[in-house]
Each structure stands twice: as structure tokens, then as C-alpha cells.
Amino acid sequence: MTPGIDVVIVAYRRWDLTRSCLEHLARQSVAHRVVVCDNGCDEGTADRVVAEFPDVTVTRLERNMPYASACNLAVAVGEAEIVVMMNNDVDAQPDFVQRLIAPFATNPVIGSVSSLLLRPGGERIDSAGLVADSTLAGFARLRGRPRPEADAPRPGLTGPAGAAAAFRRAAWEQVGGLDEAIPAYSEDLDLALRLRLAGWSTALALDAVGVHVGSATFGHRSADQRWRAGYARGYLLRLYRVLRSRAAARAVLTETIVVAGDLAISHDLAALRGRLAGWRAAADVPARLVPPPAAIDVQIDLLESLRLRRNAYER
Image 1: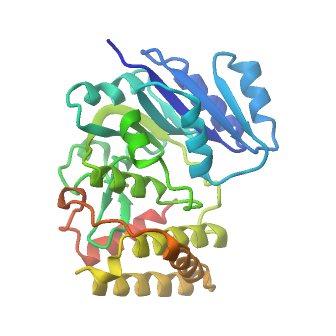
Image 2: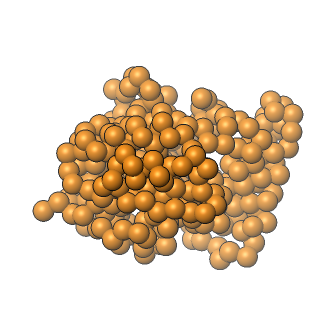
């Protein structure tokens, strides 16, 4: 029997994207429940969902909250065995949900499943899950590669990218869902690492295909976007004690290069200020253990990690 499925979407503005996402979900080949969290939107998202998609469950927040907080609240509304977390800027193929949840039936230890997200046009990969290097910097796997290379064994799979991913609810609840201390970016990487630490394995469903339109909520390379990304990086560096690990020297060198490069390009210190703020925020949070070796691709060297970071800044 197909397990119960909750598809959770956090929406903030861009009704055109939300509508398209819901239209594609309405054509799915397997029964599921959709929960949309109107994250304090001032464009009437909740009312529009109720009017055009009456079968969708809507929860409303009075003010805009960090994504992790809004998503956790939306997940708590449901109770299905499987949770599908999806951005409102993803258009899923008709069999997407069915294919995405299939690996759960093959192994009870699988706690999360990654989808294959393509860029608009369908010729290039947007992500095939996430990978973390030895400094716990996370990257979208295979980003920018041609679609036929989606089954490449490297880089390794750490866990799913949050734009479209499935989780066993038992695994989600065991680790407490997304870390609400992270205002934006890398919350999916942190969740993937915590799931691996808790003993759950992960899988990639290559036949669960969607198109990631990309809404650029915070603006591409805006000061706010770079501050938030820096915050998440600084927070995780301290939380996972990276600077006390064997990768400490490399982490310091990498972050110095990245911050210096950002300063040269953007002429401000948003990336540095974000990292310092995230580092300070992690001071009172209990440190996390080192993730298991299977969750890290140690073959990603310094030069490759810098290339992957550069790719992450592409539109």
C-alpha cells in the first residue's frame, strides 16, 4: 500500500510560481495532501489558494518568518508517514511524487530521498541532492552538468536539496526538523547531516524529475542574500567544530578566499559580517558530532570546492 504523503510548500509572494507548482501537483499520479504555508505574504496567497485549489490545506502566518520556522509549522499540520518538502518554484512531472517516495519501500533505514531537479529548458541539472566536502561546505550535486550525467557516482550524496525532497516523518521528527536558528540557506544541508548522524541513510530517485524555476527570494547576490548565506556558513562552521577538525586549515583558507573574492566583486563586507554573526549565534548551541564518513565526499579538494562555490553563484 502507498503510505500517506504530505506535500509541504512555504509560499511568500510570486503567486504565479505558487499557482504553477500547485497545478503540477494536482496532476500527480499518486494520492497526497498538500499543505501550503502562507508565510506572512501581503499579496493574498492564502485567499488565492482557497479560491483556486479548495482541496489544499492552508496555514497562515501573520508575519514573514524564517523558512525553517514556516516549514516546520507546515509539516506539523500533517501526520502522514512521508513528508515531501517543496519550494513553490518547482514544477513537478506527473509521476514526481510517486517516484520520489518509492525508495522508502525498499529499505526501512532510508530517512530521506533526493529528487532530480533540472533548470528551465530541461537540458541542465539544477541539483541531484546535496554534497558536503571535508569542511562541511555544501553544494548542489551536479549543478550545471548535462542531464544525461545525472547518474554520475561522484560527487557523493550527503542528502536531499530542500527545493524538492522527501523525508520519512519518523526521521524528521527524531532530529527535530529544520534548525530554526538558521534564517536562510544551508538549513537543508544541516538537516541532511543530522539525519546521517542519527543513523538514517539517504537515496536519490533519478526518475523523480522536476524543473526548478528559481524565484530568487532574496535577490541574486544582493547584500541581504550574501549576509544570510554567510550567516549560515559561520553558524555551521562553529556548530560542527570544523575549526577543531583536521580540515581547519583548509576551512580558514577557503573562507578567506571566498570573503576576499566577495569583497572584490561586491565592494562590501556582507559575506564577512554574516559569517561573524552566525559564528556568534552558535556560541550557546550544543556542538554537534562529526558526521559519518559516508556523508562527506573527501575527494572534493580545495580547487574543486572553489569551483563549486563559483557555480553556486550562477543565476
